[in-house]
Image (tube, rainbow over all chains, first blue to last red; front, side, top):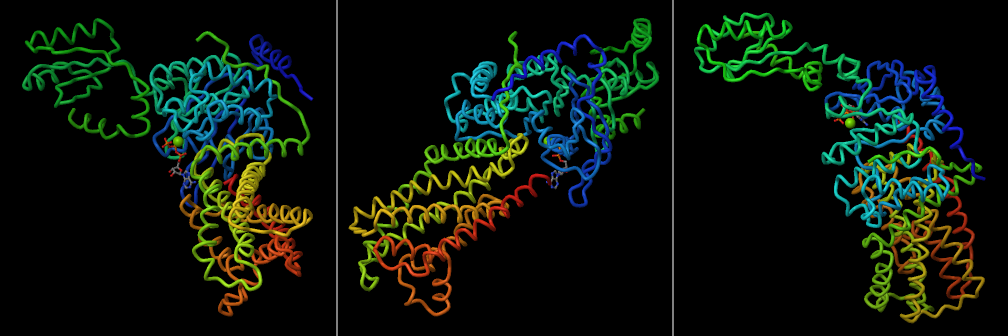
Length: 342
Length: 271
Ligand SMILES: Nc1ncnc2c1ncn2[C@@H]1O[C@H](COP(=O)(O)OP(=O)(O)OP(=O)(O)O)[C@@H](O)[C@H]1O
Ligand SMILES: [Mg+2]
């Protein structure tokens, strides 16, 4: 008894692109999620939503609780408290239903090393209750897509790290789950495979898949995520689009490198801009540039009048790296020392 | 790169819960059965271990062991047969521990499958492996002079008891596999639990020469009953109490260890 669900799904997808109500539908909802291991609190009241067909990126230093969050959302771990829903099904209670909606690619490869790539796909496909016909079709498609056709009949233990990673991703896509959890999906991939992966995620999302991913790669969060959450110490310390987060740490800065140590001290006095940060060793001065070309010209003129030679000028846009380092406190020390000197 | 990556038109089959329990268990058993032929280690112990043990006891120790009215070869077959089934079950402990240590169990747990399918798959593969091992033991025994007098009915009983015993010891091994914290520990439990059970039994020597305490243990532990029953059928001796005691032990062990293993796995799943 086979039930074709394509018609129904396709129509939902169409609705999706035409109606705003559906677009704002919340797929993953997490309220006041708490989890501790023995006396260590790992998640201390986390609340967030992921809308249907969008990507949420979880950022955070090692041990921040990203994997723990993914494990709780994918039914592998029980939370201590909190209300977690996927498509409005309670993750804790409606386990079976939730499992049929999700695909998971864990931080470490979850493959059978003695089976071939193809056998791994077929096995998981059948466990997702796909028909044999669908399994055959999806296996061929995914092997091709992830460039694994020539290795498909080899035992996975002979694969390289990147190949295992790609197969792992392919396996989690076999049933085209509407909700996808990816725990550091591109760690260990070469730049080419990484781009393919991004492309696949974008495609999946454009067709209505909801993705929650964790990453250490700020470019990845920048280019894929509709919303970014920064976790630290069991709490959400920042949340927003990548642009919003960048604004949190400040605007564009101008960085000037001065030739000669004695010139440097004079330059500090001459520039005299607000928010000046000083790096004595590299003879670098940087400050917020918000007065455009005029401000730039004034500063350079002042230096020139005093015969100070400028070795290098550059603009520095805040990157997600800055956001990450500043927010998670790993740069506070550096910032403090800078302000002490000034 | 412009292809459609996802394809929402996948057919999901709808069947009863029981159908999926059997199907999921079969898919996972098939996986473990494939391991038998792909993992040289396993192949070695499945095929060579019984042969080595057989030859060792038959020709090295055999001459010095007095088994009374029946020849040592005829005495030995049942012992080696049951011992090899017990050794084989250690693969359940090992394979569960390996799955739990590696990430793959997380994938299985995140799938919409019956919880016990993973356990049934491993135990089922063990049964298949043990059937191969058992056949090899019997096959080799003929080459070294074994002369059974078992009737076809006896052979059927031997097959049924052998399978039941294999299941029982595999389920105990499953419990151990779920309790151990590492793959090394899994190896050790096999050694600590299975070794004494097989040697302190009537597998290789009649128990009457053992010191009293050992003899009491050996005479009353399940392996001895299974060995005695199978030996009696093979050599045409009266079975006595051993027959039904062997079946009772196996069924009892299964009745306790199946729910225990399932409970342990469930407990681990959501923690
Ligand atoms: N089963 C466990 N028992 C005890 N502590 C645990 C357990 N699992 C995770 N932890 C602890 O929870 C914290 C968060 O771990 P988690 O794996 O979620 O971090 P993460 O953000 O994914 O880190 P990474 O970037 O290194 O992958 C860590 O301090 C870790 O030691
Ligand atoms: Mg992690």
